[in-house]
Length: 331
Ligand code: TRP
Image (cartoon, rainbow, N blue to C red):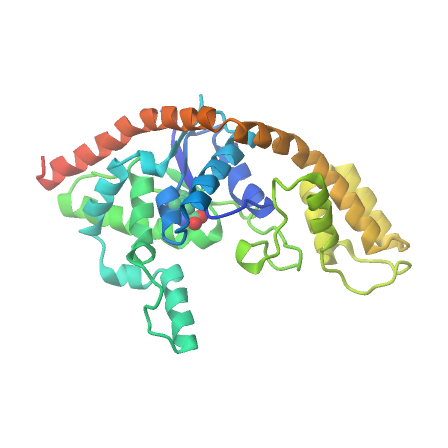
């Protein structure tokens, strides 16, 4: 039997090329070898997104992005978290085995507390129970589908470790393997895509290149990449420039060599390098953008795909819950 790969994306805003290279592309690579179950973590987004029209839209946006990027819903079980009520039943069961201390140690919660303390606010200001218990819901997402591997970015590894802890303590308590213990898969090389300012591309830094911006807006964004004041004539070190780091993600090997040569030779200004970067990014993203636009133009068809995925997913989820209930004496 093939092993199972599972991952989810939280629909909290416009997707950028960091999401694509850090999450979507590696997950779709894994889907070639594994039985893949990929989903939209919409209840996770509810922790921070309280505007219904916006959340409704971002859910479809993420779904369309998966499909436009090449996810085949015939091969991958593709669904919305909110369509699988068993996930929330399992969450309640996992809660009984999750120490509060474990949640206190979660990075996202700790960062929110630290920020409050630094501002002199109440320790728990603005922190809802959804954020505090986030790792339990995520553990349920993973464990309910008997996942073997979970492709994620480095920032999510702690959550997978918590899912392991929770599953292990349940198995230990019932002296049997009730739940499968998942492993994180971190794409080391894909993990860091530099943003416009050279820091890691991240929505929270406001330095992103959006995946689906129209061509004109895409070009404008690329022209905003921060560069130093080296004059045109001066030779430049390609490794030193985020323009070249981004270029490497989209250009073929011979194109990369050619551009690196032009950097080193001098005589090429940053503006020209950005034009070249725009050309290759636009070349790669245009077909994805076209598919994305077509999918977003027919939301009922998109919803149908997600609903069909949920129908495949639910019996698997129900079987895990049943197994657990039996082990726990709630059958
Ligand atoms: N926490 C993940 C993120 O913010 C999203 C997510 C929710 C997830 N549930 C998951 C990822 C289960 C992997 C597996 O990116």
